[in-house]
Image (tube, helix red, strand yellow):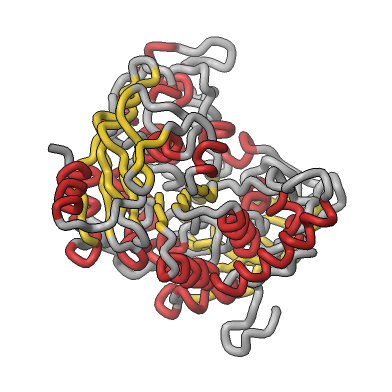
Length: 527
């Protein structure tokens, strides 16, 4: 008998109240892909329940079925002990289920009040219903610690406040079960702590929270139970207090995973890249980078920390030659890049700069290419794979096979389409392509975004190996744990500026998080 049904039978015989949500025997296919295989999960009322698993484990599909985006091919959804037919998000909302998506579903130009009322206006007489909505929202905000200015324009709010608008919107629709999909990916550590306080407040008032996340530390910090999925199936259900990160990682991957990183002290050498007073204004006149200065030395990893959207992407694009700087300069040995003397990615590669882009699908691979073709992108002029006019497919395939072997790309098939690989294996193929030439400077953007925990272990090891071979590594990541684990120095960005530099030995989440918010860690005052 599946775990959820066993638990349900136990609860029934004990006379306990029904579960908030039960998913019983859920099965879902997308053509040949068996996304959910006879999945059964029972979630108790008023608990915070984590659902974890690698990419493709089926957790997002399962939550999409619960919220009405998909219909299961087979199985049953029960809410508060009653069987429910959920064919749309409207059905889910009517059943008391709300969802906060990873990418918020808000209208930037609307106020908080207008966003919350959108789709739940209550009738044609908006002024009358607006007054009642305002009173109800003030009550909910006070009860759950969601204080917000109801007349503020949502697009002008910090990301953490936008997330609170989404939660308030769900509560306004009488949500009793709240699904959160990767809710901390765009938050500072302080905003994450505030979110967790809100979730505990929801729990104390009987709201059931379903948390989908890949961050094991957060699962252990906030949940009561955790369900682990692998290859579309539930492989374990644990009380959080009775498990740990090592066990959960092993259950997710199906083998033991090393969560710690063997990292020797850095031995910085000469400056390989020097950035001086770099600035950038986009086509709309918005300042994206302002007075950026730092140096990258061989044999060290410099991490760039910051909430997504604070100039990190633009900085990588300028350093990789994808856009010219507005002002300032970049020095690479005797070469210099300025607004009047720009460069391009090909010229920088010849100077020993390699680039792993943040968006591997848009910039790292060509979806229609086979793996062996994507494996030479940017290096197609190399003598060993043909001439500029005529490439040698056999040599390209041989190079790709060698890269795949060295970086454990699975399946090791150079002829397989680039999009047929998992996210982790796509990323390993790109890393192999960029690292194989032992560059002087390695620019890495979001190296483990959307990557399974087993591949994260491998990628971190390879980045450290590049540092130890004398490469200067610039690491941009929204994962603060990743920055703290890998970086030797940490630069923090806020609104296009570097607002602080912290040595790895002196760094902690609190200090970095306050800088990420643009404040002085000592005084809390804006920088």
